[in-house]
Amino acid sequence: MRLKPANRNNLPQDLSAIMAGAESMMGFTANDGLLMARKPAMMKALSELTVSIYKDTCLDQGLIRLVAYVTSTAAGCTYCKGHTAFGALNHGISREKLEEAWAYETSEHYTDAERAALRLAHHAAMAPHDVSDEIFDALRPHWNEEQILDIVSVISLFGFLNRWNSLLGTDLEEIVVSTIEA
Image (cartoon, rainbow, N blue to C red; front, side):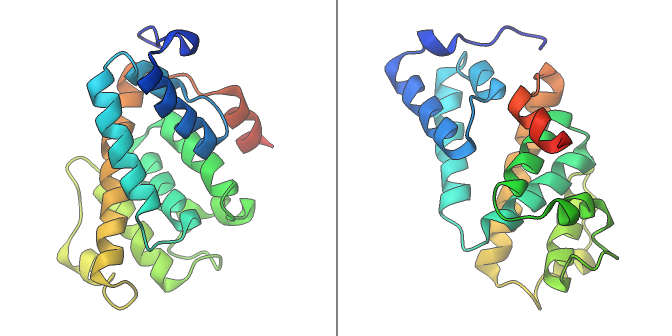
């Protein structure tokens, strides 16, 4: 890591509670959370945003992780790619399906609805984004407007997380490495 993370054991109670909630959701202490703890107001705001995206959604939790995985892969963020792969595997996505994520257009593991969502994630993560009206319109036969907003919310959240973690060189946690390499 390029900067020193906060010490998990020395966090004030409010930040410790945020970390505990994230640990409960993810199953481990995230290094990026410890870096964000150095910016308490940002950590609190990002925590609320993240909870609103992951909890207040009509989308399947596995699909959310696949959208985030393709977004992070396209953005080139190894840390978020690892986290989202770990999350996908722990939310019902098979290893075979995850391994075919970058081949979503032709893989038999993906439905047309999933292809449309992953296509948006792939093209939205490019800088500048490469989302045409055709890519966006291809969502409409499969997803309603609320679901499309949820997909865009996940992509946008990872726009920030990908940039944060790739710039800071956040170290991937051993539990994530061992799970995705298994």
